[in-house]
Length: 138
Image 1: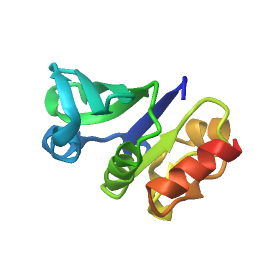
Image 2: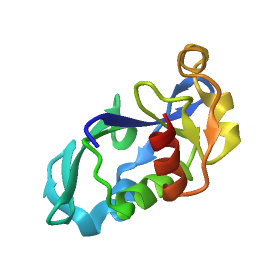
Image 3: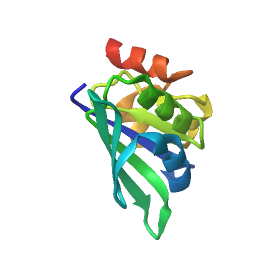
Image 4: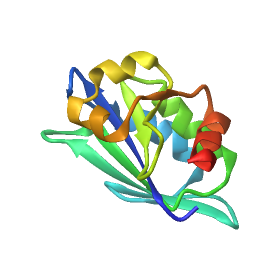
């Protein structure tokens, strides 16, 4: 897939964060190019992608945004993203999506109002395969 996905965390309309350690734990087995805020992931000879981490201002250990550049088809990527969606008030979206994806419907109450207006009503997904189905139907 040749587009970018964005995973963001919010609380009461403001940026919130996921622990960097959690993100590392989820993707550690596939991490081949670790940098402070750039991680290359390789799932096999033909499946790789890049993560760009944006820490909260003043707290480098809390990540408020992950850009997933050129997501690959490997189900382990999608399973990992679903794991991250299950923490906090976290949403996953991409340009042209039908709505931001969430695992917990309550995450919608924490998104900034302008973001809800721009992206539409959140779509509840249950796992990585469900995320892929939503992307393919967009």
